[in-house]
Length: 408
Image (cartoon, rainbow, N blue to C red):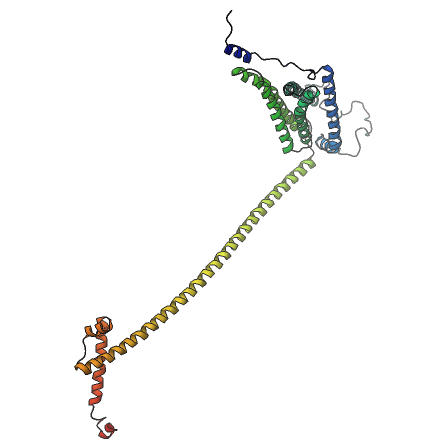
C-alpha cells in the first residue's frame, strides 16, 4: 500500500470537522438545567409584568375608559327597567336590541351574525398567530444563541442565560412599545433603538453560528439564510403585532361598535387645532427671531464698516492736508527762489548794459542762469521796459509845463 501524500492528509484534516470533546467541567446541560433556566426567565417576566402593571395601571384604565364604546344617552330620567309595565304583554318591543343578540325567527327580517364577537375572535386569532410565530422564532434564536455561547466557552447555566439576554431585550422593547401603543402614544425612540439593537444581536448570533461551520460557497450562504430566518420572522411578527394593536379600535369600529363620543372628538379636534396654532406661532416666532438676529448682525457689521471707513477717511484727510501743506510750501519756496533769480537776472542785465552798452540776448540770459529761453526773453523784455521807463522819466523837462515844479 502506497502512503498518502502530506497534502491529501492535510486536506482531509481540514474537510473533516473535529468534534469538540467536553472536558470534565464542560458538561452539556441536562433537563434540570433547562427547567431551572425557564423558571428563572418566567420569574423575571412575572416581576417585570407586575412592575409594568403597577406603573401603568392608572393610565391604562383611563385609556380603556376613553376608547370603551359608550351607550346611547337616555332621553328621559326614567330607565327602561324603572318604567311602569305595559298593560298588554304585546306592547311595543324594546327599542334597543343589541346587535350580538340572535334574531328571533318569524319576524321576516334576515338574521345577523354576532359582529362584536366575530371581531373579538378575529383579533384573538391574529394575536395567537402572531404570538405563535414570535414564540417559534424566539425558541430558534434561543437555541442558536446557546450553541454560540457554548462554542465561545460559555458552558452550563451561562450558555442558557446568554440568549435570554439577547431575546429578553427584544421582549422588553416589544412590551414597552405595546404599552405605549395602548396609551395612544408613539412607540418611542428608545424602544425602537433597543429593538433594533436586539435584532442586530440576534441576527449577528445566527450569522456567527453559521460561520463556525466548515461550509463554503453556496452551502454557507444557504446555512446563513436558514439560520437568520427566525430573526426576520421575529422582526416581522413584532411589527405586525404593534400594527394590530395600533389599529384595534379601527377593526372594532368596522364591525359595528359605536363611534367615539362627540365631546371626545371635539376635544381632540380642539387639541389638534391648538397644536397647529402653537406650531404656527412657534414657527412665526422662530422666523421673526432669526430675522431680528440677522438684522442685528447686519447692523453690527454696518457699524463696524462705517467706523472703519471713517477711520480711513480721517487718515486720508490728514494725508491730503499734509500733502497740501507740503505742496504750498514747495510753491512758496519755488516763488521765492524764482524771485531771487529774477532779481539777480535784472542786476546782471544792468551790469551788462553798463559794460557793453546794450542788453544781453535771451539765450545769453538763459545760459547765464540755467533757465529756459522763454523765461530769459520774458526777463529781457521786463528789463527793457524798466530801462525805457527809467530813461523816459529822466528825459522829462518839466511837470505839466511849469519849470519851477519840475525843478522842485
